Image (cartoon, helix red, strand yellow):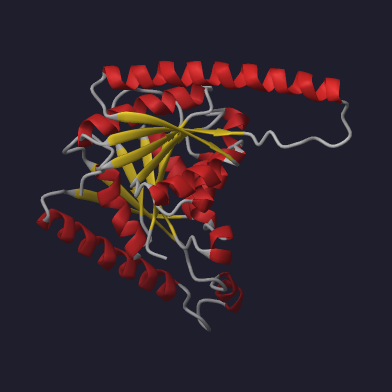
Length: 299
């Protein structure tokens, strides 16, 4: 399925500009419309200030708005120079909420944002805008991280728990990658909660190894089914089964294999469930060594 409308969050920072380069590449691939979105702070009245101070604040705010408009116009011209249909929309409000609301309004399939920090301790600083956008959005969100590039992705790694949302992540990852790019899929499996207690009872009283074998066989059956389904669609996938905590397995494999994109499904994004994005999806975005595509399933 082609992408028709892409929103690119623009706070005029270097990470946002780098993410914009990815958004342009994806827009060119799909001949999609690219909407540059800038969320402005609310310049509401400030209590207990003098008229003179209020006037000064107003002058500063007006100067900032002029500079923002100039910078946005420059970026719009750069997008259009690539032959991409583009426009700029400026809204007042928190960036994550503005992007999510506009995506619904414009029926966008993808939001592209940058985030600060890519390596070392800074990788853990996801940033409030990225986190808020992922939590509020109902469409896919691409969080771009270094290494930066002005092309679509080349080496995707898709995390799967064999539920519909993670299966959807495979096809959606292909939409932001070079056509025909090989897709690696990883499933992190763990023993059921409480299995550790079986070792205390001893193998004779509780053969816990049978539980492990059952888990592995079930995962292997699902992996084989997934492989057959995508082979029939002409898109071969390679599925790896690795024991360990999902987010840790996913990010470690991406770093070890040199992937430039991780795609992961997020379960639930309505009401209270929006606050429970899912520890796997959020932890993956927070700790990933590369860009992450968060695929939102049906509510």
